[in-house]
Image 1 (cartoon, one colour):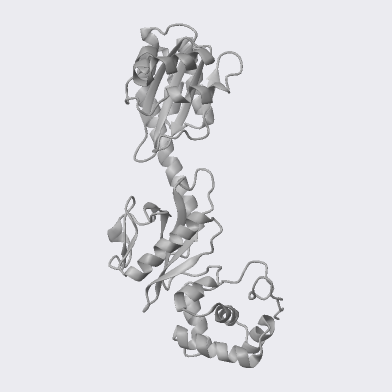
Image 2: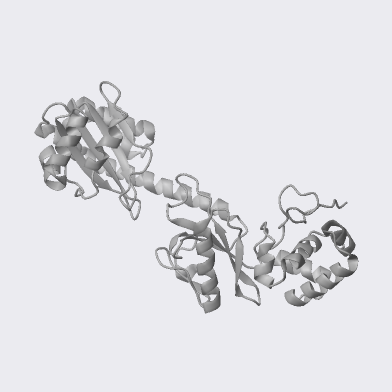
Length: 378
């Protein structure tokens, strides 16, 4: 059984069911070639900025046409109107006769049909081009016109599924021990967030922002610190995680970490992942956060890590190369700066505020500093 214009029913069903993977895209192009007698067809995706994304799908009826994808990309222009099927002449009117003709000569084609398929929100668009060594018939354009709503539905479903997969990957990177997260660009604009809207984020009077707006902190000093941290994250993806205190009692802090991009997960503008932590949050690996959150010195932070790991003062002193008296002096300063009443209270405070487990991976003792001998603790 077939539908109008001879488009195979199983192809339409495949598109409706959103099986728009590489195989589904290839079947779509192959069906178009079969119905139009064209020589090759190209399907490419562009981001919201109009830049072509990797993973172009191209199918040809003869010869190796893989190199043609890059050549024809300029013809599949974001300025094309949605739902309109562009002929060779219409593309020449839009882009310039000489440019279109030059590209067709390079790929040894006489004619082109093209269409622009917008995707939801900021997902960008799909662009489809069909190239032939003969003049297309009116019925060939009708084939694309009939396919348009099905391709649009499949593309939108695929974009939504990809976005949800990306959000899951970002959430996994943020960790399960957070109150929420914000993916930020260098200007602090929220590219994605775990909060549906500003009203759903905790302590909205202390920090606020929704997707597409700038993450704002109520206090000017943390606001300036956030800007500096984002600048550092933009400069290097290896920037260490840093903390910003939002509220002291009970402690609420924002943790800023540079993103390490994976294809298809981090939006191209993302530079940092900001995670919100309160007393329900646990585990991060960075002594610097103790420095940021409690204002203690790095040498004091290393001792605090050891004490929080359950080691005695003398064990920690031995592993860090300190005398017991020096360690005792450090501990007094740590207790004062963190508002702790002693060793047990310090451990509770560090664990309760999501600052536990900060030992570097692979160390025997869970304490120490690069370049410093590591002592082993029983």
